[in-house]
Length: 322
Length: 206
Image (cartoon, rainbow over all chains, first blue to last red):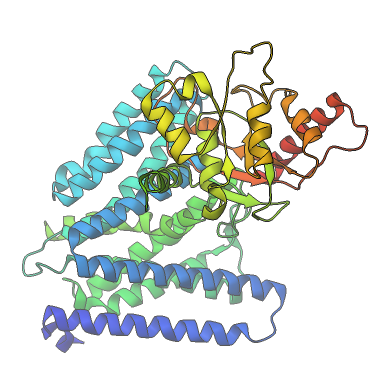
């Protein structure tokens, strides 16, 4: 694999895209072949879930490819749009009151754009604290000005948490794109791809492993499929994928494995948190079944990424002093 | 493409961006039949939402009702309601010799579909207010036109009364099964039944 590192950037990109699209095509063909066989309802449901995950990976990869071709500015914009859609879904699912109107406007039309502008401008110091410090101070003020004390803490927490996941978390993906290391210029996009692949591998592994490995769930009331073993398997698979991809990163193989392991572990727990949130909002069905509110399940797809990306970003930045 | 068409597309894009504007055809397919859609009314956004959730080829022949005094007051309002939405104007001030339903009846005679909000005014409570008699009279005069109950969900959260800028929140429009005026059904029974049909769609939407 060391020789892969010696290739030029464009050769590496070419190779990577050939490999990824090849794998995706292979997975799609396998999924199709499997769909021709008889399945029990449970298997059919799992298969359906898998097909949806696969489709999400397809869309993500194609979008990534487009943004790669069109540059970092387009990629940042693209992630900003995804962030907007995810936040819209989050706010739809939580119950806000009339007095929150101004705070919500601020989140959508001030905080979200500013966060992405900060990312695009590589102002990473302010970028890291803008939402958890400044936005979190201003949002409760705006909500309080709405003159409604009913469930104030709960409402504020919901809005802030939505901002944290959908804006702060998501914005770290394009930030990775723009992060520059010594002797690693122009390759930030690889880090985005890296984290996307690691998270996707962890999620898909979790789907597959959870069928075979029925162990005591960690949190029975939230997700019956998640046990310590399935978590470990998914995080290991993510770590392994990261380890194998070390040549597109600035890391050495063991570092790469460890960082990917942490990110994948976070992603799986992120999925758990999102499920808990949905249970709390009274949504039993998982997304993508076309619930009538129009919440299409985008949040389900991006939440693991939103949890993994900040941890990944900050650990990388801290470690390399970038 | 003409300018009204372009503005229409831009408006429906905006509505989709902010609310998703999902149309759910629960009791009837989106077909080019003559119909009266009647819906709960909570916001100025309601009409745009219904309009954006209709398939494009149905939009041209589905017309809203606009209060003449308000929607012709400025050039822009007049242009949008006339050219983009093809609205049916009604006057709110009632004169002695004029039937307020006449413009609606004329549109129906022309074969157009209508969207009406039978509560008469925007409500801000969860349940729709009692329906006004207009729907009953139209159903009496045009027994062949399908009456489609319609539930608009979530829109009050997008733009509460008194606010100007909409918050992006997903909304949906649920279209129910067509209903008709039964033989010998009196006004009150019919209007209650119609309102119940709209309210019943709420549980479908949730």
